[in-house]
Structure formats: C-alpha cells, structure tokens
Length: 561
Image (tube, rainbow, N blue to C red; front, side, top):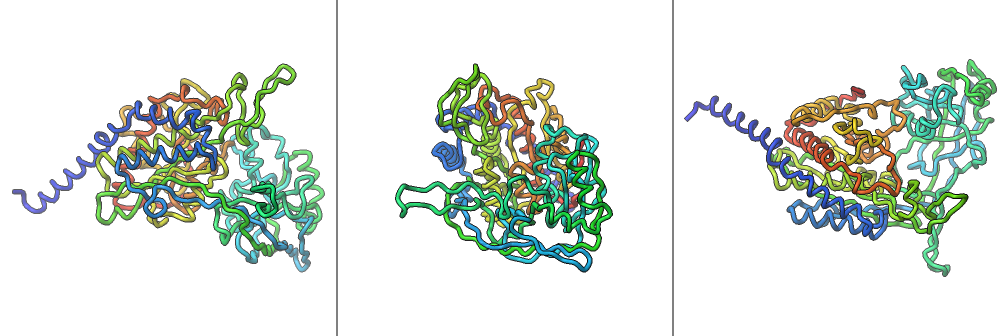
C-alpha cells in the first residue's frame, strides 16, 4: 500500500488520465455522422414547413428533440417538470411624452415630438443625465477599409453623436450595410455608450415608426386584439440605452458652441467627405424617459431546455451552457409568377430569399441555419449523458425565435431556469454544416467568434481543445474582429449571454450562397466536417466542465488570429 502522499498523487494521476481518456474516447465516440444525418433529415424536412415561429412545424421539431432527450435520460430543465420553457412574446402599447433637454453652456432647450424620434422601447421610467458627449463623425468602425471613427476613444457612459446616413465615401456601402444600419447598437453594445444620437430619416415622425399592428383575431369587435406599438420578450422594467434620431434644429443647437458648426458638418456628411471628431465640451443632455406600457397581446413560444448533471458534489451546481436555435423562417404562401422572363415565388418569408432556379420550392428548410446546430446540440447532449460525466453540469438550450430577434435566448437570459451567475460559459452553435462560400479550401476551417471578448482564458481553452483533436481544425478569428462587416458577434444567441457578462464562443463555418434562401437543403451539408466541429465543441465543453474555477473574465479581447 502506498504511503499517504504517494497515494494522493496516484489518485490524482488516475483522475487526470480518466479525464483525458473520457474526452478523447467515450464521449466523442458517441458523436456519429449517421446520427447527425438522420436527425437533420427530419429537422430540415418539408414536413416541418421551415420551422417558423409559432408554427406546427416548430412544435414538431421541439417534440422530436424532447423525445430523444427522454430516451437518453437527460433531465428536463424548462418549466417545472418539462423540457419546454414558455417564452412570452409581448405585444405592447406605449404611451408617454419622452423629451431630451440639451444644455449648452448656460443655455438650454427641450426637444420632443417632431424634433426627436425615440426607439419603440425605452425601458423603465427614469431620468438619464449625460455630460460626456462625443461627436464621432460617421460613427463607422471599419478599419479593414481604412476607416475607424472609434479609434482610441473611451465612450463608456457617453452620449455618442454621428452624422451621414450614407456613410463616408472611403468605404464600400454595400459590403458595410450592416455596419451602417447598426451604428446605434454598435456604439451601445461594443463601447458601452449610454445613448446615441443620429440624424432623422426622411419622413420620420416624432414618435418613431411603430411596429406592424397586430392583426385582429376575428371579424367581430369583441374578438379584436388592440394594435401593439412593438413586440418584445424583454423585461419592461429593464434599463435601455436610448438611441434617438433628431432634427436639424436639434443638431444646430447641440453644435452651437462646437469647434465646427453643424451647417459645415452636415454639408461634409451629405457629400460623404471626411468628418472630424471631437468632444462637445460644456454640453449636458437630460433624457426624460416617461413611457408607460400596456401588454395588449401575448404569444407563446418555447425553448427546449435540459441538463446533464455533473459528477462533482460542489461543481455540479455550476454549468457550461450549450445553445443553438431550432427555428427558421417558414415557407412561401403564394404561387410562382412570371414577369419579364423571370419567375418568382409570391409570399416568401420576411427574412427569406428565393434562389434563382429554385422558384418552385415553397419551403425554406434551414438545413444549415440552424438545423446543423440543432442536431449538433442533440449529439452533444447524448455524448455527455451516455458517456463519462464531467465535474460541472451541462445546460442545453434549443432557443426559439432567433430569426425574429433572439427571442428565446433573450428570454432565457432574463428568466433563466438555473441561476444566471452559475453559468460559467456559453457555447453557441449556429451554421456549422457547410464551407464558407462553398469553397473547398474551407473544408477544415471553423470560425470562432467572441472567444476572448470576455475571457481570454476561454479563448486559450478552446485552442487547447482543438490541439487535442487528431488532426486539429483550422481556427479562424476573422469574424471576431470588431471591424468585421458582418458583425456576427452581435447577431446570434450567444450575445444574449454576453450581455449578462457570461464568456461565450460562437462556433460557425460561415455564410454561403444559400443563406436564408430556399436552397439551404440537407443534400448540401458536409456531414464529415460537421462531426469534426461538434467534436471540437465537445472537447471545449469537456475542459470547461472539469476546470476547478470559472474562466477568468478579464475582457482583454479581441484577438483576430
């Protein structure tokens, strides 16, 4: 019998060997090409009609996932006793008279109505005062194109002001459409700005463009549903940074004591000429956010949530979360028409495009987006449930409504079924079944987004996990670049967790010509590659689940190599 210290060493060594062999053996062996293909063939079949939000097809997908989880003895973790978490999608009517008071030196003016367009959702009632106001030119961060309006600026808790709807002349407006359209969100999400101010779009009114009104439930008055101003899954008492659009009169007063007056800035912006950037000294903004909210309709959607319990008595109360969205965009309701020699499908989904040559296809199957992530998550749940158990617990969430605006992940982040601070990391899987742009040179490449934004330790763990694969994959961080024109970091479910400060990695193999078209079919999935990406996610999750501490949240990123 070994001496006590030697015995402890032997036990520790055995545990380490078991951990390594479990990761590279039992669990990975349960992830199979045949399973992924079988499951995806159903999830992306015509029978599920494109898995649109609130549809029968999406319900069938949820039931299919539930049935397999039950077969594998994975514990339900949705509403009590259920795999399903009900997601309340609220149609909200708002009322109130928000204003912005601008103080320049000793002069002040209050703007409302036609001079200020407020966002549809302002969050709870409050008064927000900001005395750090920064003009950032066009508000465009595209260093790859040689334009970086945010370089070297600390904009935390500042009001960010930008001009020029068309953007600067030195960037490709087509390639940068997302950057141009999302300037307000980018300043708030990436730089922690407290508010943003941009120019009014032609034809806008003082209360903003309301969301499409709810359709009446029936023809009789008694059955009518009141019109909603906006739809949300967020808590109505949340604090939301206001992103407002303002008139020329507002800007003229705001810049009245600036080193460059508004007339000159507007002229340069209209001509897409270079703009300066500077702090607006002596300026204070007071937002009076006074809206009241009335919920006038509630639609019900469902996340699918499950847990594989960890083996450690203490660490099993903490979680590595895995996520994918199981919805897609649905099907076209109209017929094919011919116009001027071209054919098109009427009634295509709002976020769907008809691929030329596919006009006769009515259904957007979403095999890659995100059928691939949906079935990869099933494979991961089975591998952890039937293979060796790591020390931490594993949380699996199939999110609903991602295509409608991250409904499921936003709701789960606000209404988690486990304590939100017990989630040490979230690994999101969205579109892992193809090669970027269908290039054969991408056959071994996977893109990791956000891996170091919150935790550089998480980034290092994912690289170590990849090195353990035989052979390893090529890890590409192009989409992790803050100047990436696609801005993928903000566009999938992982970001709902990142907003809560949880370290995240978004695994994807990139966009391709069939993205959001009716040609995203199972026949085009690269299943061998999909297995390897799923293996990488398993290895990363395994290491996180056996780590004796939560990955450090040092916010050192991003790295783009």
